[in-house]
Image 1 (cartoon, rainbow, N blue to C red):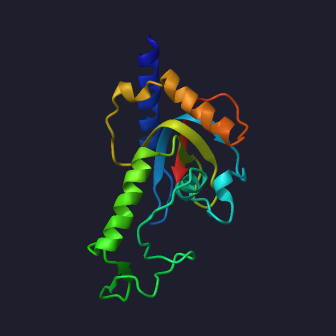
Image 2: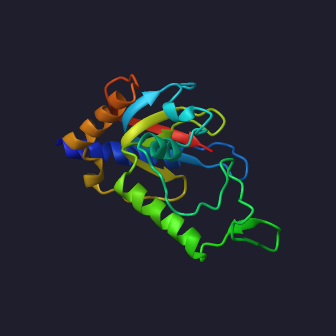
Length: 191
């Protein structure tokens, strides 16, 4: 069996597990099968983006550590509330939302999209337990499938290149995150 065939077999196995496991779950809870190439961290591990300033939001942290500065009007305060002069609309349920057709807001989001596209977070944070008890894999390859929704897998998705491995090593080293060697991990998520 070739390496690629073996990886495909592992990927297929995760789908079978995701569909064969039966739990009594409440409405709105799903069980997902996941296959990731990366490094595993136990519950309670403190990542740099867990600081109060970022509240676990890796994208906000990533923008901060890479000098992101949006020169356009921002409709939000530092606390995440709408500014007094923010162009907002209120729906029939009283929920506020920003008017994306306002040219100032459009410019703000367009700049953000372009910056994130040019400076993507090099890894994916994968919760491999549950929303109430999060444990994470930092991954450079990740496939997931929700119970009841089959997903065809292209074996090429399971190829981990030397560049992928180096990207993960560089990220861990740059931010002083100690971890074991990366591997393929078959995990589940309940949430």
